[in-house]
Length: 332
Ligand SMILES: NC(=O)c1ccc[n+]([C@@H]2O[C@H](COP(=O)([O-])OP(=O)(O)OC[C@H]3O[C@@H](n4cnc5c(N)ncnc54)[C@H](OP(=O)(O)O)[C@@H]3O)[C@@H](O)[C@H]2O)c1
Image 1 (tube, rainbow, N blue to C red):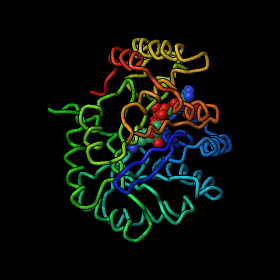
Image 2: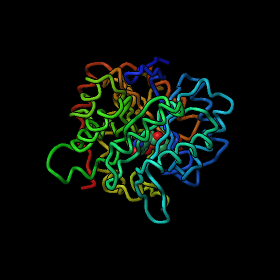
Image 3: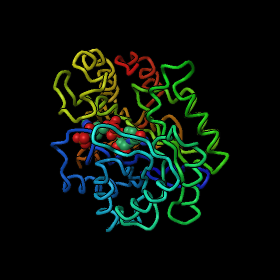
């Protein structure tokens, strides 16, 4: 697999990462099986993926524990990205960016992952109660202590910003400028996909101009862009898509032209090429600093997604994707 370099610290990773979140969180809970997920993670490493993206809150905690079982055998082949700053309660998720908490959470993540160092430690969400410089300063101390190699900043929860004037990522960019004064940002993780291209407007160019890597979260549109989901099929109650505005039967039907377009492009590249691979190849085409982290818990999906780095989209393909209808179904 092609390698990509992210961040001023020149961190080198396989071009297609693996989002471990679905292994213990978020989607198809009844299909979450440790043995299958372990096979999927090993297959990803076999195929040249190195970046394994997790978070303490996925599960909570079970995702890091699962990954720890992989790292026990193959730590040298993996690039571990985990996150701090969100706590899962009974009914809700809260931010905690207090320095003392960050220090404790990092030690706990290191224990669960069974490693001495985290390659990329990301701030999952800035805590509105704590100046972001304080949280980031505590994270920088972890680098100095040798527990973490580089810092990342997540901007996935930026959707709420749409209600205010300005661009989707304006608030994130303000925070990024502030934390950059404290310690260099090596990577930003935010949603980027064919049906959610907003990061292309300002966030992606901002990162490119500063040699900051961009981890594309949800590059498969939470599974929709793979064309394997049927409108109205229904989701398990704890599946994130059960409450996602783009996943009502009506919106899934209305957004089918996007999948049809990806399928048409896939067919031009060969009978075994899939819409998922086209969706990932589009993300890879957005810049050499961009690394998609498709989430998957099945070995079969991992193999398919890894192969996307061999698919080169043509100018015609990219133009067709640019002309696809805008996705319907919004959080606003
Ligand atoms: N920083 C943040 O705040 C944040 C937020 C969201 C996500 N993320 C990261 O981004 C990663 C990716 O996002 P995501 O997992 O939410 O969404 P995604 O990658 O867009 O989609 C994941 C879904 O697609 C399915 N899938 C994967 N490959 C497939 C294929 N080739 N064919 C058919 N279906 C396929 C998976 O199925 P299975 O579940 O059956 O495997 C899963 O349900 C996460 O795992 C996480 O690491 C970060």
